[in-house]
Image (cartoon, rainbow, N blue to C red; front, side, top):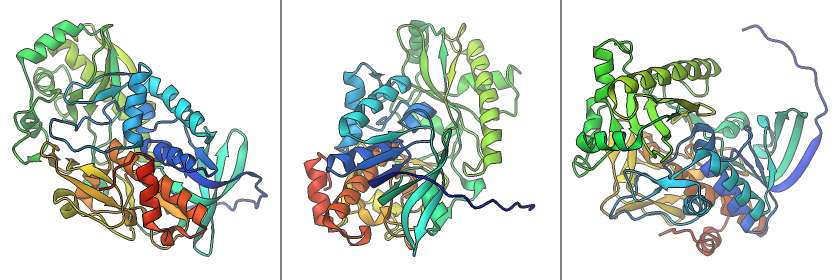
Length: 452
């Protein structure tokens, strides 16, 4: 590959902080809030113009769509996201669960308020392009923005990027799912002009359940989910392919809907599932964004023809960015396993719990029996690089554990754990790897998190 040599530059340090969080999805946002609530100086850096990540920039409404009768759910900051959004008029009832569908645009403001209330120093429109590492200890990051190239120094750093970007840049050991095995990527979209009553009457007359997912994907279920209602559409797209309304080879269209407003807006359509795209490859990202927008319009065309209530529907919005489910994961002090997730794993260094919920790699398990597992602090600690923690879907573990921890509410759990641990380590004056876990657990419980 042809290369150039970059001229050496002096980079201004624009901030020094106790805890620096990079990425503000449910994991990073929870981490920053948790850290600030522990009374240490905290900074939150985000590459887009809003906080919220998967909720706001991708447009995923269902932070707790897994919640059913019998679910033992998490407690803590993730629940606050849902409750604050509802209190501020930013939710609708989620159709398949006992949860709220969060309005993506309203949550941008909800997140602003929570960041300001916590006393976090915010920095938007700032992309991390490098890390500052000395003797295998991360000391800060290099960002690039409209203001140029700048540096931020920190005593502790939390990677909430979703793709383990900081761990990658710092040289921490990682694994990445092969492209052909990665979970699909999605361009989320929404529609206006929906006849709500006509559509819901159609759904009532043609109910879908989780067993219908097996038509398109190799879903392995425990059986108890089979007859439960799912807001899933596939037959209209099969009909559209068969009748030539959309290309017959376009098999990646089909999926779920969420809130339908009284004004006729379908605010979350998770209908596009494109495989063989790597979310850490800029060329794949480019192709997937463009292909996803095309496929969303094909999905709307199919619904115009074959979904009652959608006859006059038109595109309302695309997500601000592609939804990516699966890329890099750290190799951690502990590797979470399928056995841990399926069999109620228990850990002395627990920083939170999550219900027995699995969604990915051909497996769907909904948490209806009260079972749950604990998340160990060791899964947040990368090997080799000191003073770095991971919040969100890049925590250490195997494929099936990833199909659980990647979900937004679990990302908030690992985020809160990371934020508290970072703050406690600063206050106690110890390295992250040597932090007193009982101090961390006590602080988490005072913040309202459940760890056992």
